[in-house]
Image (cartoon, rainbow, N blue to C red):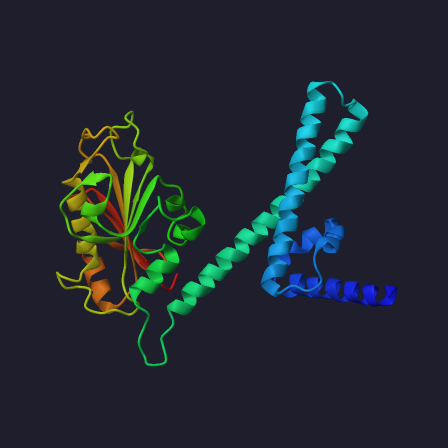
Length: 311
């Protein structure tokens, strides 16, 4: 009977070690520093269930570390920790927290790699010679038809465009300008993504926008982007103009001052097709790597950046 139990345990350990070695390397520190965690895992689990169990073990480790930290602080406050034992306990605690942080960082990096691989796949040409619709690209960056009040932080991947965009107070993804709860406008334009800074925190103490970011996606390899109706540079500047002529409201319903002092940032995400290059080089400058354009429109008070999908 014991031989049978030992064999089950051996197979479980081998399966967990193989999963961590080949698919989930972020859990190596867990197995190395808390080998007993394997004993708490059931022997028969699917890969996805096993990953959840490993994650649960990390959370358990994190909670125990926090309790040890609180215990050290309580004993320090009560003068219950002697100098000769404080340093070893504190160093052990710091080592533990560092290990848990490394696991979290590994998970973060792996998730980003998965997102970038998914984006790269979406940009590939299909078997029929066509490319993915821009909505597929858009949805990888941020879910469509939602605001930041409706989706979680982890569902948005704005860091792909600019890390600064991760921290915002309000975001609208593929919403009509007139639907935005924070500006008064009759415009029927659909902005792919509009990001508002912390001045949109609905506080009566804030009178002006700090900045507004507009993001426009175009289908990979799309041509005809130098015509008045399809030019994305003209398009985002039109959005800037429409927002500037609208009005922002305070939480009590009273209007704010105008948005003339707001900093506008416009990002156009597209392939650098000949038509887009023709349009961009009129008023914008090549980036040093020749993979995009940048510039500032004095007339509209907006910074514009054209970013190639090749990046």
